[in-house]
Image 1: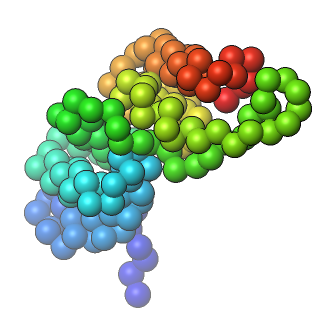
Image 2 (image 1 turned 45 degrees about the horizontal axis):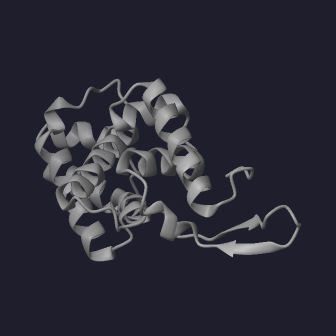
Image 3 (image 1 turned 120 degrees about the vertical axis):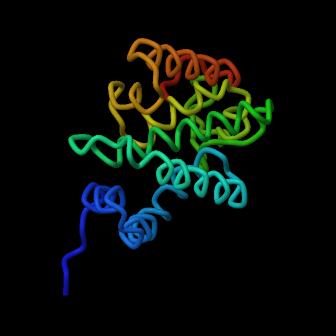
Length: 178
C-alpha cells in the first residue's frame, strides 16, 4: 500500500493535472479546515460553505503555490481571509470565534464567576477576534499569524492587545489576564 502523501506532494501532483491528487488532498484536510473555520464562525452550515470556498480557491490558485512553501500556512491564510471576508460581507459581528467558557475571579474577593467569553467576543472587531483565536487558542506565533492575516507582526500584536483590553473592559475584570 502506498504511503499517505503529504499535502505539499498532493498539491504538486494536482498542479501537474492529477485531479485524484486534489481529491485526496481535500479529503485529508477538509475536516481540519472546517473545524478551524467553524471555531471562528460558529455556524456549521456557513462554515461548510466557507470551507468549500477555501478549497475552491486552493484549486483555482493551485498553480500559484510555490513548491518551497508550506501547504498548511497557505491554506490557513486562505481560510483566514475567507472568514474575514465572511464577517466583512455580513457587516455584523454576531458570529463568535470561540466555543469555550472561562472563569475569572470576581472583584478580587476570590470567588469565581462564570463569564461567557462568547457573548463578549462577538462585539470585537473581526481582525481582533481572528488574531486572538490564532495567537491565544490555535498556538500560532505572532509572525505566523501575521502571514495568515496578511498583516504586519505589529498589527497582529495590536489586534490582540486591543481585543484583550476590550474584553477586559466588557467583562469588568480589567486586572485579570486572559
